[in-house]
Length: 113
Image (cartoon, rainbow, N blue to C red):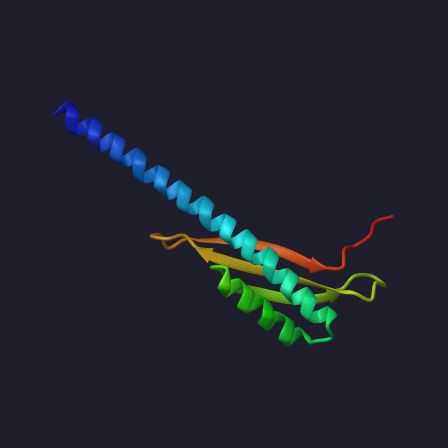
């Protein structure tokens, strides 16, 4: 009977460890997809494309990197002529109803005095 309890306890710990690894991997995937999506969108804007095209590029990059684009918006930073784009990307945690979310900014950086 003790052996059954030990096996159940070890199995529970193993499942929890695997779940933790899945959450961490999904978070990393979401961060990488958000960073690359923001850079792709900023590149589109610098080439003179509009917000729609830039956000479409961000969505494509997010999908190719295991994520899903949730938000995409462009903005100007102060008097700087270079645009900035902010994206939010989610990535599913396999085997769960959870999603990892990451936000990234690409383009011009705000300079502080």
